[in-house]
Image (tube, rainbow, N blue to C red; front, top):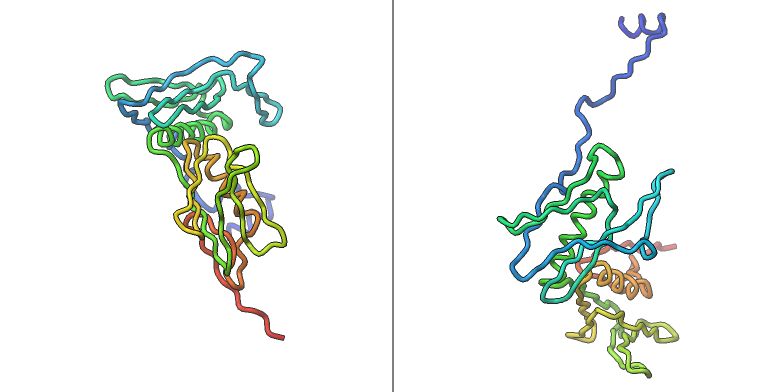
Length: 227
């Protein structure tokens, strides 16, 4: 009956299918606990060295950096002005806040910066690692020395040539076995990126399950089409 009346008078209901409000992540509010051997400071970046990013018509300048120094090294994260870092001496922890939590860009950067700082804390104290596995007959990764003394990863993956990759500075690669490589470093992004670069040379294929796998990666095998 209500639908008939609405159609006659031109009434359109704007009620959605769900009455609950959209859930927001509160990861940015969680404090980051520092150990006694870790130092965290905030430094200004000279204007000529500042990077920036754009969201729509607005441009945001990364004019400060959060420096986390631990026993394994030092990592720096550039942040915009609206990100605030406060240190609690009593609990020896830092908290990330933003000037306006209702603004979309600030809200999205809030949790991102907090996650980056947490990863940097783990990296400077424990380190990050990625395990690269070679699956296939004769597939393996070898560690070699280059002509200029640089460390290389040589990939034997059934290609007519042998890809050789220079190990980036700050990363350590070991080989516990011919089909395993362990990549270690303080910067999680660089560790996972180098593992992804190695994987790109022979992605896992879904029929025989051959290829280069990273960490706990698994694929679902397909059946061959029989004509």
